[in-house]
Image (tube, rainbow, N blue to C red):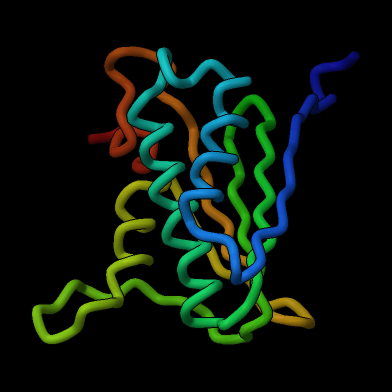
Length: 149
């Protein structure tokens, strides 16, 4: 194989509205165990689990839709994608004491290396990227800003 070849592993799961978010987290945790991140990158595991919880909750509560959860690891980034049937794109809102909700995408923005929402013909997909630290000095802030703190 040449330098340009990409080896990736992926998983997909449909989460109907009748399923709870714990099922999504448990399924995600089992997939992440195959990558060995519980010991090598536990903070990244926590960030991924929080993101899955928030995105699946958004699909169920706000889009009134089942959630299609797809995760792909390409040896650089764990791509976490959640598709639902609503065309409304999420935006992070600063938490407020006047609202009980609205913190989900603010949290995703804080814990993911990057994220974006893409409109699709039948809804939208929210995609977040996570790269585990490669060394003791590598943090999400360093990664997010190109290594410049």
